[in-house]
Length: 493
Image (tube, rainbow, N blue to C red; front, side, top):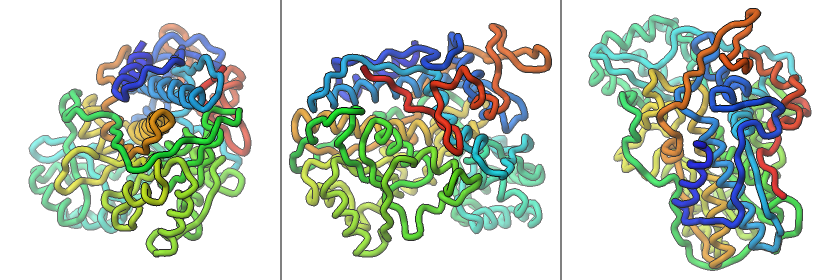
């Protein structure tokens, strides 16, 4: 089973042979007979989300849910071992590929089921990747409308098309679709790739060609640990979930970093989230669930929040004060920001000896002289995940990157419990992508019965996440407040 191989390989890379091995099955608490990756992707919404850009459900070209389940299994083994080292009596753990799939589509599920009259819009149509005149398929990335406008102005694109394309391009992270004006995609086909690179550099946007093969171009460890000065150990286990009594300070944004903190919180850690004055801007992104964005809540509910301006000495000192009483600090800041603020691993280790300091980046440890933006679709393009034709507009590496970061924190906390030594933990979207097997185990072809898509074995192909949330067979795997979200994906006994 791929999940077991991924878990074993990750634990072996970390040098761990935990006494508690996490069992993995296909269905878990989902009351359906799911026998393989294709069935899980069909039943749990991955085929639906991945297929939005094309207009019908499509199987991912990689065994993504199985790979995610493997990382969850490694996390469970490490968390159980850490709890045992602190006095717990955990003897077994389990997870499933179905629970991994539900975690991966958690944000889309929350949006679809939010108690809000906001109408989510996603449409199939002309979508990236782009193509140059000399046949190079490439991804383009910018997080700001100014860069988008400068790039297309450099190609003499029609202003109305440029304006119409920005919203679907910007929202593709949230909607898993990106219907662009056809004239924009036609425009890049008028220029050789070298010229497009020149225009992109002048516009301040990132462009990367899509690799034509599935081999990992530069193999790197998924997680690296380096000793930090000073020693410490965790408080004795007070009972409850495996990480009860452990304090984590998190300063993160978007998906990758918050997912890392979300995993640690679900395992029982007290996670203190640092946000800028006025709160994280993601809190206001529709649809609203209660008094906050559903998309934001699914990754951040359960965390304590404090607001600090990290650009000021007072805000930086506030982080040091929080870290002085914490076990771990997690961030996914841009390269160089931690050093600029005096909050890198060595700085904070002096404040809190024995600290676990985790940085989840886009590309490290790749030696980019001038790194492109470290975002999901660029990493898919460069890592070989997009060799099937185009990067999925489902955020594959953001989710996996956050999970891998959390796994590194667990491994470092366990090592600290044994030796007292703190650690710097490095991982990235790119390093996480290397855990995903490149060859799929099935095709995911479906037929239609009574107008509804099903796999040949009869497994229904989900086409509406609201129906999934209402399906009683998923009751034990999901929780409902003002939106639907996945339950923690492990069981410990």
